[in-house]
Length: 306
Image 1: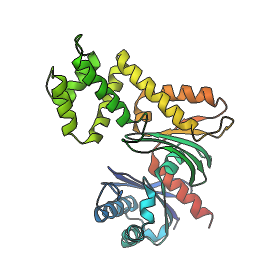
Image 2: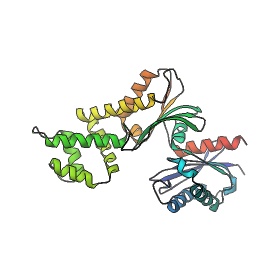
Image 3: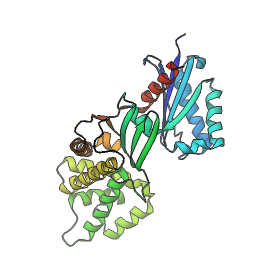
Image 4: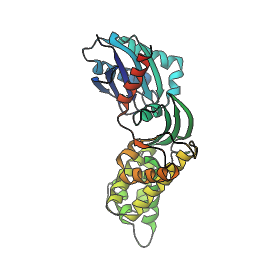
């Protein structure tokens, strides 16, 4: 029977799996809960990975899978012997006997936007980072330092910037801006809150919840709100600068844009693309597609080399 490859995109919210032939034809898909051990207890994480892979296999004999590539953020955590062993036992429990290689999510994101082995990937979701990719390795990384130390231009950064401007606007005698009214009501659940009401509501929530405000900023910018547009323009500045820290001025390898902010926010994506095109006019700038099929393609390439 035709050999297969397994690719997985293992996230803190969901785990996605794709089984494909070595020629790239889709054979099955699966989905389960969070599989990243940085976001879920190890036992739950490996169970989710096994569930997604099992669903993608369907009725296919697991022995047909010749290679597997699993992409996840914080891949260094899986170098922990206990974590590595738990993942391998989970895959073996569903009948897989092939090598399973774990790589960073940036490697998978890059592969989801280009067939080139070398180039640069910019990821902007809740967090933000840029990396230089060579083969299946990251050679240089910029940002990705988390909400307290970095992630400039990310969904969290956009949300925090909007929250800070909202708090200031609520204190001004002239009254809150249109964006501030929208953000304040979304956070407090009440119309016309005071600055103190808003601040208390922000501090009562988990800090990562601020990332959800990015969607409000994006919608406001699309309707012509100048303050919202200025926040997104500043985010684009930060993201382009993050790329510049890992990429030489004369490089021509492709640049791949990935992550929820870059995929869903037209103004951020177009702003970043314009800045990158000015800095690297001879480089292709591509938007990443789904990550799990890209992981399956990398796995298939590894299987063909055997």
